[in-house]
Structure formats: structure tokens, C-alpha cells
Length: 393
Ligand code: T4K
Image (cartoon, rainbow, N blue to C red; front, side, top):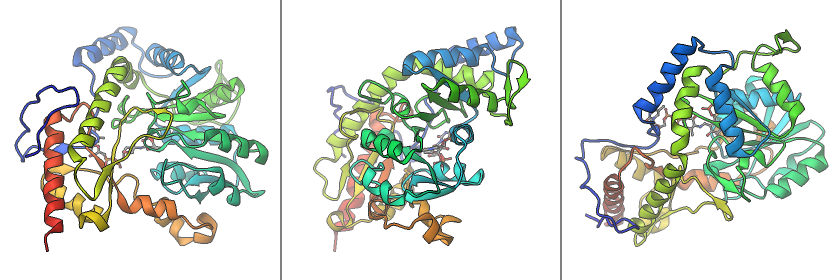
């Protein structure tokens, strides 16, 4: 068994039995009392939805935390993308990365837009001006860049490109709450951004999403659209119902204060993985993109088949047999998913080597408050054993 000495040198408890699953994506749960206290408040308010006091408090706290003029809490980040697309009056094509969670592209397709997939730089897993530029044409109505794993790519270069093309740059920062780049959350670095408060995210509302923007006019449109197109009780546009409810807001409000501590703990766990796997050929842990203060919400391993003798897929299957649940986030690239794969000339007119390379070798490992240091020791022991066996003749 690998020695489990944490970077801080503290001794950890022995790992649980192999029958106990180690799971990626466990929610960051608040203390039950903190949550129920807020639920009690909702009961006493007798107010459950329609932009209630808890939702407003959540928006206020996030506006301060993110240092942005407008935060609109909605049902999920997928809908947040759609609201922004509608408010920006997008039509025709939108350039998006091929390497992302399918929601980025599906949100757009669902409302009649055509995602066109650009490649990502394997170093950051994000778009670059060089991958986006060849795809811009007179049908392009926006660029939606993704802060994958909380990474930030060449944001200034993308902003300039969007400006010169006369289209908005929207950031799908679903995974980036708690990340800082040049002192700010990546979601607020372009015309508008979205964040996710899904159960698996660093701050959860069970289901939830945020639209963030410094553009007051755009924010007013999104705010109206998320509530049947209503402003001050009057219908001013076509809208939908995308309002967050008070129970979701209570969950997010009770988790939010834990954010700094969870990020620090995630970072420590990231370092522990690096330390425990440092000597092992064929696998490495990716670092966050340069200049980014990451939330370390994802521990991303890269499996090099040539060196370890074990492919990513084989490693994942073998870990699963050891009751260790991982995810090959975000393989495969969206361009090979239906319906996009059926019209490659429309959706993926350019080669996507960065996407293909990442999709073949990344594997996200369990981390977060639901995963102990001892669990990480167990995961690394299992990886070492599987890689060792893979090298046997
Ligand atoms: N854009 C990007 C870049 C995104 O990453 C996402 C979402 C979106 C847009 C859309 O945001 P939302 O509309 O969802 O707000 C999960 C999440 O469902 C999804 O929100 C997230 N990205 C994505 C990265 O992860 P799956 O398909 O991997 O979920 P699932 O059910 O396989 O669960 C993942 C792991 O978490 C499993 O090991 C089980 C564990 N889990 C899950 C839940 C829900 C728990 O232990 N407890 C739980 O309550 O998509």
C-alpha cells in the first residue's frame, strides 16, 4: 500500500473497505442545521418561489462575491445559456468548443441554433483565437467559450476576435465558481457568463444556474425572460419559466460560506494525488491553467498508453471493479455525438486534434468533501496495481 502522508504531514485514517464505493461528484453538503434553518425561514415567510427573499439574498451574496453588477439565479446552467442566447438575439451559428459537457452545445441546438465546433488547446482545454477564427462567417452570431475544469484560456485574444467579428463572447463557466483569474471569476470576464449550481458542483442548489453580466440592459432582459417576460408585473417580452425556487436558494446559501474552506481542501487533495502518483509512469495529474487560482473541483489524470501499458478506458473499467467511480470528463468530443456526427460539414468543418487527444486520455478522479485522504490513498493504490499489472508481459 502507498504511504498516505498528506502534504501537510497529518496522519489520515485507514481507507474504508473495498466494498465502500469511492465516488466522483459527491455533493458538497451543508450542515443539516444550516439548511433547515433557512427552510424554516421559507416556511415562516410562506414564500416558496417567484424571486423570493432567499433567492434575492443568494443573488446579493453572489453579486458581492463575484464583483459583478448583475446575477440572475435560474433553474440550471443549461437554461441560463438559453436565456442569454435569447436575450442576445442569437441566430444561425454559434462557435463552441468540441471538448465540453454536451449541455453547452445542446442548450443552443434546443432553441434552433447551430453549434459549430472549434478545437481546444490541449494545454488548457479551452478555445483559442486560432481555432475559432477559421469558423467565423456571416452566419456566426456568438462565440461561447467554456472554462473547462475551471481553466481560463487566452481570454483577451478571444474578446478581441469576438469584437472584431461584431459578436458577443459568452462564457460557459458552469464549472468555475470559486475560480479566480486576474482577481475575478472567469464568468464575468466577457459580455456575459453562466455558472452552474448543480448537485455535483462546488456550490450546489441541488439544481441551479446563474446568469452574470455587467451589462444592465442584457441583465434586465434575462430577468424578464426567466419570469414569463415580466418586468414590474407587466409582460414586456416572450419569456419562459426559469425561476429558481426558495428551497434551492436555501441549499446554495447554506453551502456558499464553506466555499473558501472547500477550495483549500480540494487543493490539498489535488497535491496529495500528485504526490502519491508522482513516481508512476503512464499517468500524470494535470495542473490548472497558468495564472488561474483554481477551485480544484476536478482532479484530472492523463493516461499515456505508451508508457503505462494500460489505456484510459481499461484503467477506468478496472477501477470500477475496485468500486472506484471515475468519469472520462469530457469524452467523447461533442462532434461525435448525435445529431452532430450526422452533419460533420456543418458542425465540425475543421480538424479537432486537441479534442481527440484529450478525449482519449483524460480521466477525472474522485475528490471533494465526500472523499477522504484515505480514499485517495486507496484510489492511488488501485491505479498503481492496475498499471503494474498492465506492464507485465
Ligand atoms: N456547461 C458545462 C461546461 C457543464 O459542465 C455543465 C454541467 C453544464 C453546462 C450544464 O449545467 P446544469 O444545467 O447541469 O446546471 C454532471 C452534472 O449533471 C452536470 O451538471 C455537470 N455539468 C457535469 C460535468 O456533471 P453527469 O452526466 O456526469 O452526472 P452523473 O449523474 O453521471 O453524476 C456524476 C457523478 O456524481 C457520479 O459519480 C454520481 C455523482 N453524484 C451525482 C449526483 C447528482 C452524486 O454522488 N450525488 C448526486 O446527487 O453530469
